[in-house]
Image (cartoon, rainbow, N blue to C red):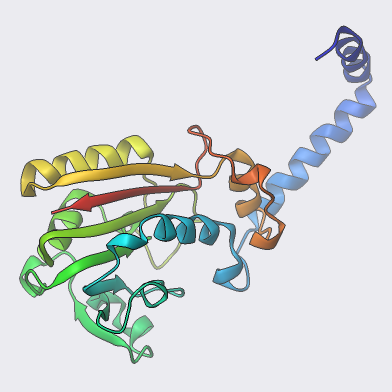
Length: 238
């Protein structure tokens, strides 16, 4: 910033009217965030940009017998071939929500390992699930049970999310937290971590909370920032 610009800014901020306008604008933004109810279509939300990028970055693992945890948007079908098999699953406690989806092959109690199929899948797409559980390490360990040897889990979680009444245990996982969870998982179950990566920055995080659709996200807003990522991801191999 030039000296002239610094002087202009100092003069500007000494004018209380300008300062009051700035504060009013910030309050309006905060009120809009507080009233945020999510975009009308999940596919239009900004965090989906990063989920799709994460899946695209790791598409080489989506092959063989693939299990995807059912969501509003699913991705396995975009990358699998005619010889691959796709299965969808959901937690038994959410049966009333997901029973309308005819393509779900499995309902099981996610915290009860005895209900899991054993060593059945080459790839598991585990998106936006971890925040719903008090013990993410236990859940990841359970999910590993379903992997064949050398199988891969694609994991991702939102950094920012509105409180959801249907998810009383919702927590937010940082990049450091996911690294720790994966390191504990490796101690328990072996295997290795292929990658930990974050997507997004403060600009895209704010736009996500302000209900701005993905079509208005510019290349600048796609830049990564370790301080305020929108999405935290990991790739684990058994």
